[in-house]
Amino acid sequence: MISPAVILLFAWMIVPLSLTVYFSFLRYNLLKPGDKPFVGWENYYWFLTDPSFTAAMINTLVLVGGVLVITVIGGILFALLLDRPMFGQGIIRIMVIAPFFVMPTVAALVWKNMFMNPVNGIFGRIATGLGFPPVDFFGQMPLAAITIIVAWQWLPFATLVLLTALQSLDQDQLEASEMDGANWLNRFRYIMLPHLARAITVVILIQTIFLLSVFAEILVTTNGGPGTASTTLTYLVYVSSLLQYDVGMGSAGGVIAVILANIVAIFLMRMIGKNLDA
Amino acid sequence: MARAVSNRTKVINTAIAGTLGFVMFFPILWIIILSFKTEEDAIRAPLEVLFSAGWTTENFVTVQERSDYFKHFSNSVIIALGSTLLGLVIAIPAAWSMAFVPSKHTKNVLMWMLSTKMMPPVGVLVPIYLIFRDTGMLDSRIGLTIILMLINLPIIIWMLYTYFREIPGEILEAARMDGASLKKEILYVLAPMAVPGIASTILLNIILAWNEAFWTLNLTAAKAAPLTAFIASYSSPEGLFFAKLSAASIMAIAPILIMGWFSQKQLVRGLTFGAVK
Image 1: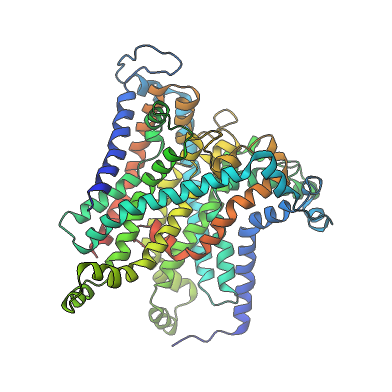
Image 2: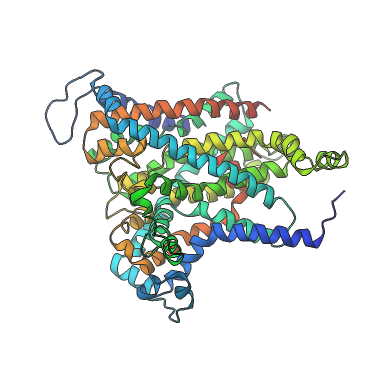
């Protein structure tokens, strides 16, 4: 009974992926019809030595790293806070989690226009009101702006996962340590943090997989620009293949993206696999 | 022993968490407000916007009239529901047999299925695009439904598997001893126990499919574009119409916001593949 699922997923994984690998060794441009000669590693050579590849790799690392730092630290703080007794906990939790359900294109456009627009955006208004020159987010610091938007979308996920983990913490243990005179900082450092370690790792790994593929937020805000200032690896592959019609080059980039994602995936799979045995 | 907490502590906690929650929610709140304002009011300074007198539902009407909003909305509904149901039909038997008749390969199969989810979409963008172009599936709802079903299938199978595995096997034996036929066993014993898990899986999958914004943007144009792609068309220069952008955005995210509220717990389970419970 599992065969339909296995066959479908196998086909989905193997057919396009082998085509990508195959295309990556061809000189194949949709604008230049005719034969598609085998060119060996040429596409890889040009893709990897292109200055925009270096820029894209750095941008990818900055974006993924930046979002991870914000969401993990923010997520721990939010989770600790939401775990404490308060009034209206349900409503507050919903408000914190809501951004996760906003589709990427809406999130990006709302931040771009209503908040980060230097003239009409709220941030610009506040800056002008206080007598500072407004910041042109997408002109001057496009990658930071996109990082903020993506972090806003993923902070709820980190919060929710860490809160779930925190709530499974044995309360007796906390109380015992409290009676033994451990202050809050020590309880956090020696009991909560070790308990959360696993959930934090899971958050980092899963978010990395998704963040490596951030696309819509870049498309609707900066188109990767100015120049290549906000082009990530995913976006670079999109530009080479669907905007420059260079199938060979785009495929080489695609293969490189798969390899990078797999390095992260191996660690994630190990963690999930261990849990399956338990 | 429950710890006694003074009301004062609770009030302080509420104030801090409430403020942060408000900050997180503010962008959504803001577009709700803007969507009921005129364009002239919507680009005023924030406080002026808030206290400007005019409230209008005009924007919602204009968005529909000018851009055939409902067509994109129904594309989203069809694609999200279609991919979810198609996925369930394939996933339920698979998850069912792995949960109740596990073999020594079950774990490997599950892990392998999960690994397909790790593949970045750009890795297969080019061939999928060319296949779609050559088979006439570009900008078609069927093509998109199939792709979204495939990318979410591992999550559906995993979620169902973790739910099914919680159904105790002994209960089946008990039913069989009492003389239940296989049909009765499934209909009266298993189905009722499986329904909550299946419902949560449906909910999460609709959310994921609704918000998917890589394939929907790359494989659709005017005809089959769901809301993700429709909203992207506001990126410039229409984006400067704040009130209309807000109205279109609110209509696009409202159904999912509501569903999301019901699926908080399932979200963790579904997206962490059972690694965090």
